[in-house]
Image (cartoon, rainbow, N blue to C red; front, side, top):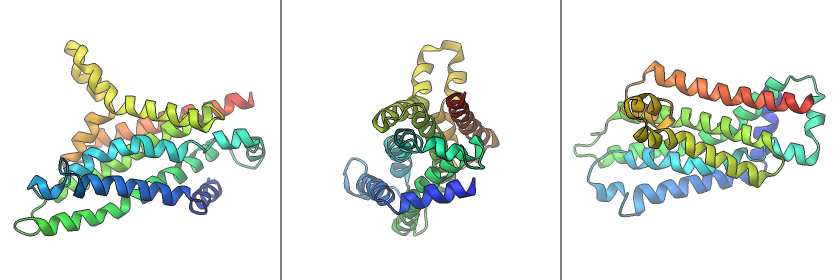
Length: 240
C-alpha cells in the first residue's frame, strides 16, 4: 500500500494537478472569506471562520472529484491497471494506496487555511476572541468530509475509464451525500431526524460546534470504508 501511495502522491506532485488543485481551492476560499462583500469576514463584524467552513464543503464537491477522476479511469484507459494488478499487491492495498494519495492532496490543500485562524484571531476584539474549539472541530469535520468525498471519487473512477464521466458521477454523489438526505428529510415526516443522520451535513454541523462526538467520527469512517469496499469489489469484478 505504501508503494502505491508514494507512486500516486509523487505523481500528483510531479504534475500540475496538485498545484492547480491547491491554487484553485485557496483562491476560491480566499475570495469568499476576505473579498466578496456577502461572505467577507471583514464585513461580517464577527471574528469567526464560519464562511470558510460553510463554503469549503461545496468547493470540495467539485475539487475532490477532479483529484480522484484519474485514479482508476486513466489506468483502465491506458491498459496499465492489469499490469498493476499483476504486482505483489492485493486489490485492497491498491485501492487504499490510491485513496490515501488523493486524500493527502486534499488535506494538503486545506493546510494553508490555518493562517486564516491567526488572521481572524488578530482581528478579534479583544484580540484572540475566537471560538478555538469550534475551529478545531470544523477542521476535523472538513478532513473527515474530504475522506468521504475521496472514497466516493475513487469508486466513481473505478466504474468507468472516462475521466469526465468519473468526475460528473463523483460530484453528483458527493452533492447527494452532503445535502441530499437533509433535503429529503423534509418529506420523511416522523423519520426526519433519522434521514438527516444518514447524511454528512448533520454530522459535519455537529463537529463544527466544537463537540467531537465519537458517533460523528464513526459515521465518517464507516461511510469511507463502505465506499472503499465497493471500489475493491468493483476491481475484483473486473478480474472475474
